Image 1 (cartoon, rainbow, N blue to C red):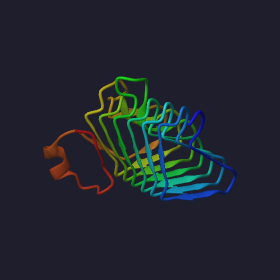
Image 2: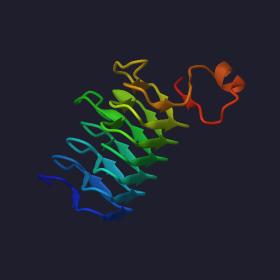
Image 3: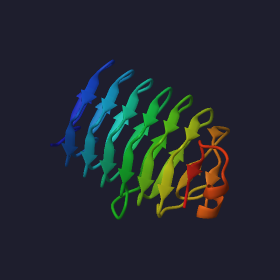
Image 4: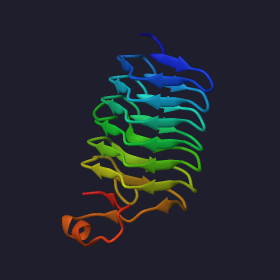
Length: 173
């Protein structure tokens, strides 16, 4: 495909789709959309790029040149598996948030340039696992967090995980 795999307008619902080998984004939605249980692999830009107020849940995004999943503001990004985005091809993270008031929860990000990359303040980041991401970031390539966010503790070892009393920790080892 010489463009986006799926382009969806405001309030769209995309469920159970496979998007692969597109020259830009696999799935590109406008505001207030739902992307659920989709697979976005080997796209030349982002796997899934969702507009403000959207929800991306239960998806797999891997082997994309850009980011696995990218959202801006007021979105929910939950229970996704993002792997090998940006590796040896471009600059990509498993999940990228560019705006505010997002919920990033229960995701798994491995072997990307960066795992979970938050580029704005006022977001909630809890119960995520990010491991073996190879790029640079602050505090690490696993969790690259900018600004004042509601960020659950990032646990960096098995020992720390075993003694953690908060069930909402993020795992970064």
